[in-house]
Image (cartoon, rainbow, N blue to C red; front, side, top):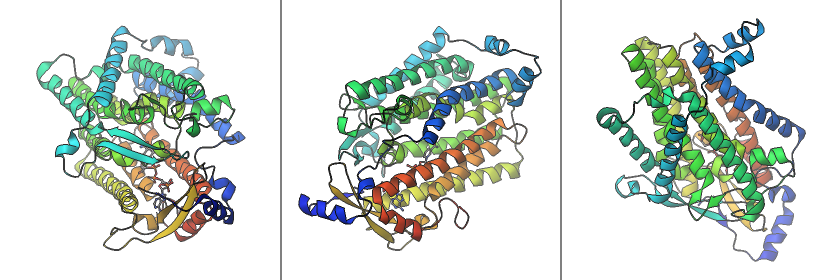
Length: 475
Ligand code: NDP
């Protein structure tokens, strides 16, 4: 466990807390209670534009060979009206609704009804029932970690169908991509709206709910911290991990199958995208128990940001490189292909090792070796809403001594590698790296703000010891 509870009598705990000059802010860690105008403006823009951006990108591929500028030029030059573009957009179909319903229902069954068996035979894999982090209300939730199993079963069935049963074409996802977009939106909006209503009327844990009083902020950032149905159906773990991330690798496989169908071959760029993103997805499921300690699960409330984002944004925009390569089958030179592979693998190594170092450090409470030495750290404390004091540690050695978020740096290197597979003819595939830079920089700042609220002056000591965020010596 990352933190261990103070066993001192409450009077002493109270006395101790008054010694702390950041007392008031410490008991307010977690997402904001009050909304400043900048957050509100960002949220309104996202609510308005994120669905439009998704549509625009997918439509550009469908109608304009992935050019982001041609639709705008057509509209500005009055060659086309918005209605022309809209009328050419495939609509929701019964077939897509059927595929999507079966897909989500299948993932629910795998998540809820099949306890993990992978941890019984895979050495080093942590699955089965695991505990999450302490919530601001002092609750520790239990989770059934069975994502790797869900991923394996789904992919075994996919390959069995592709090579043996032939019930459906492996291009099924690509062939129904826009009708499926409408289905994903319906689910995304339904689940976010349901989460909001649930937060007001039947929350799983009322003490972990946050209401800002601003409808849009609460809808976007969520009210409930860990909404659940029954004992095991956890909204955050399910929607974050599946159906979107299980689908990620299937979507890429479907794009590869489409290339094969259209051009009689699969390009090395498509193979690179499948391999590098496949490693990232598999890593996610192999480390699903670790994921319980990341910001998504530990700190974010469940609202539109996670609900709609996981259903629509992730599967549609994280897979743009594969989609682009269906329309533009880039065959990379050997040197370029090797260079991109190396960038992707080194990025992945940094991402994984940095995350691993923190996980090991926190699991062993600092009793471990990082790069062959005992880790260095700063002792820190924080309080939950009931005034209970907890102690924790912030590591200042290993990759965590280089920068405060070197795991993000590795992630960004990997993201750049995916984009580079597509060459330089269009900007659409580079959306991912631009988005990741914005997402992770913003996340960095958001996390640091939260950590400061949580740890107060201890956090200041930490930032003095590790002054850079992402790139040592630069930022
Ligand atoms: P981190 O795993 O970096 O977790 C941040 C938390 O770790 C802090 O809130 C703090 O939590 C603790 N912490 C911070 N500094 C230290 C330290 N020096 N020693 C020990 N603990 C520390 O962040 P994320 O959860 O955002 O990211 C996890 C991974 O997921 C990253 O590699 C990121 O790149 C990736 N990611 C990918 C996304 C994608 O869309 N592809 C989106 C988001 C993340 P505490 O309160 O416990 O002290």
